[in-house]
Image (tube, rainbow, N blue to C red; front, side, top):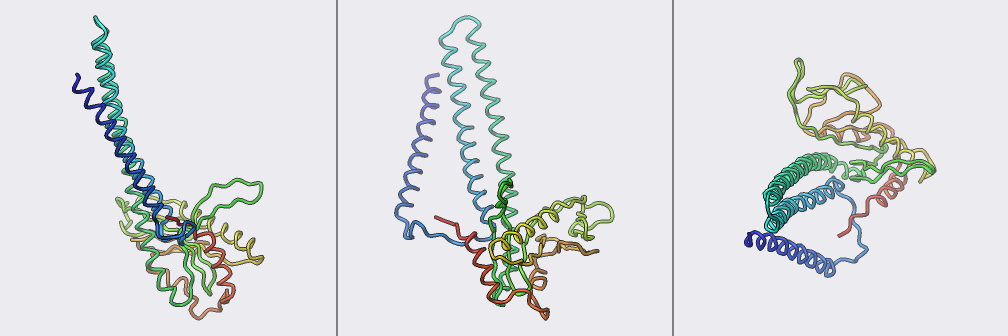
Length: 301
């Protein structure tokens, strides 16, 4: 019993010292950074997801530490109390301690698994946004301005709205494009459907396993918000076209709707002005880009 008390106390003190030393090291490194304290970088592809991955990593580490220490403390407390009582109370305390030990382990284990599953989904989404960003890169050669993970959701006065991010925004002669990326795993296909195809009829999306309108509605809402924001900032209407992109999927279009649904490889041709009459001139492209850059330049060390 004495060895259990010692082991529990040692584990708690050791973990506490490690966490304190890590905090001191991170703080000292920030103090010695070679960059100005107020330096801000533009957001990269999936910046919000990258930050979420960091938060999930911290939650997983904390859950593992709690899962190691708290059950041991509960069991140690039960053994301590059981050694100081007599009669049937001692075994009862031990049973309660053992049950608490098992329950705490199961609860923490499930929490860790849930965080790990969420991290895998977040990492998949981040990878999808980076794929889209790579296919947008060639547009810069022709003068297009590309922004990633644009913070959005500012509500009008007196209204309430949750903040969100527009995965990618492209500004060019053909106008402004608000791009929503959906990275979905492939599932078991229904009869008559291909496992790698998404069918778009202009109103809904038919996946191999079912239908929904979620991505379409989200892309449309984001484009509408961006159009209102730019008009409010610039004093004139700016056309914003919503695009919904599915990395790794083939899109079978059987109709036209307010949202254009694409594979990332189709983005350059869908966005380039081609022989059409430009909607925005160079001066207006620069004005819109400045507004977006001011929102996206918030990445700090």
